[in-house]
Amino acid sequence: MIITESSSVPLEKCPALVLNADYRPLSYYPLSLWCWQDAVRDVFLDRVTIVSVYDREIRSPSFKMKLPSVISLKKYIKPSEFPNFTRFNVFLRDKFTCQYCESSKNLTFDHVIPKSRGGVTCWENVVTACCVCNVKKGGKLPHMSGMFPKLKPKKPTVEELHDNGKFFPPNFLHQSWLDYLYWDVKLET
Ligand SMILES: [Zn+2]
Image 1 (cartoon, rainbow, N blue to C red):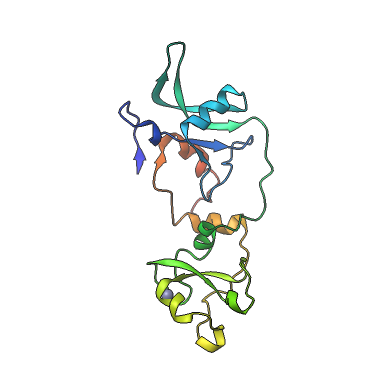
Image 2: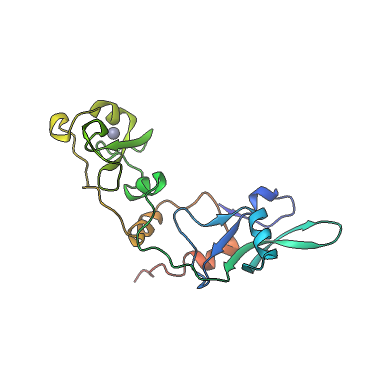
């Protein structure tokens, strides 16, 4: 869904897309968005440049401004090669499907080697699982339960998550963001 610009749009529906100093999104997954208060604060602190604005004004007795819809950092932040180990990114790596039965409902996490048997919480030992499979496997090792993940879990690169993310776009995209989000998508030949 693309939000159209209208003064009736509530302020909390006006987040700013945050770009790095090279005009690439600071992060794709999750998409780097700041609430309007943070965006406006950093405009006043001179930390960001306004790239595009909403057709939505905020006013006080002494000033008025259009809310930024896209901002870029003045100081470049080196992006990491590997994404953060977060719940969202584990789901994204596994394309939001249970690694045991391929269900996409009631998802949670499963430690391939259970924590009770010394399994650690890391990319290589945590997979997306539905609650049913998670309970079924319980504290057993894969060879005891006969349940093996479809794909051997590993640490994904930012690029791999980016590829998977194309299948799971954010809930909404403002039209002013599109130039910055998909410019590096490979064209179909
Ligand atoms: Zn399952």
